[in-house]
Image (tube, rainbow, N blue to C red; front, side, top):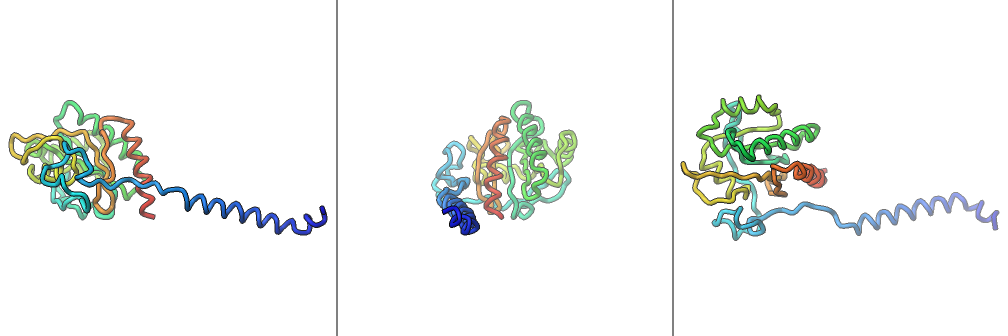
Length: 223
């Protein structure tokens, strides 16, 4: 009997390895793939969605835009095409939530330093105050990596339209007029197809960890 097993020792070893591989393959096929949701206006809290698009259930994407960054460069959606990015809305004179949001964006900037396909985009909600020069000073003060992170200003109506109708990030109605004011803590995760894949409270450090974990999952969709 021992002689029989010794004779076929190599065969048994090969079969054992093959069995392990087959079991692993079956497990991998049966294990559900973890994917982030693709958010549509109809699936988001109505407080965050402009009434004109609350019915939309599919194909929602971030609209084209044309704004100006802290260096006076024109920034459009083309600068973010084929990239994952995190967007938010802030203003440089904000004394409450914005400093926390900026601090957490800086953490993301540091943690994502080796992931060149992930960018940051911050829109000022007080463009009448936050000129290019003001944004430049703010960027310099806080150590913004200008190759990865644009602070943008421009038409208030366009910025507010983007917040309400593209990023689904505003809790108030308005038309971008002089008395209109958006004050939101949301970070929005956008994929390479301009689709929203996550919402996060930008004032909370634990939400930064969640963004990083979700980006890791999202990047698996782009081998």
